[in-house]
Image 1 (cartoon, rainbow, N blue to C red):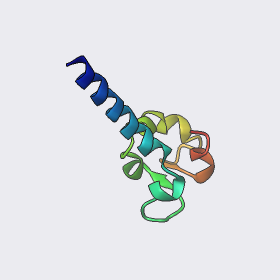
Image 2: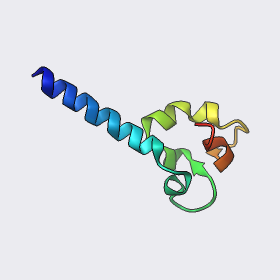
Image 3: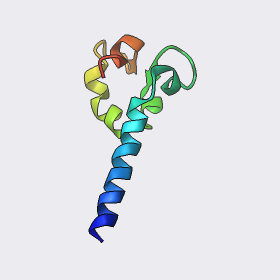
Image 4: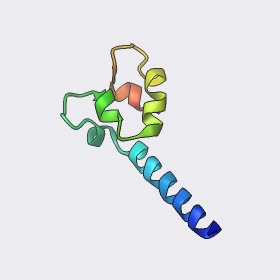
Length: 69
């Protein structure tokens, strides 16, 4: 049972890390040059840092803002 819990924890970590590690162009689904909150919602990690990364407060992440993630 402990092995199952460790495996599930590793899978969850890998999945969240993979989504966060996605490049800017992959996350910018509509190709408008910014990552909206909706587009960022695929990653809990990115969403938890969104407000901090959105330094100009426009509700989107530019390529420059995202690069600081």
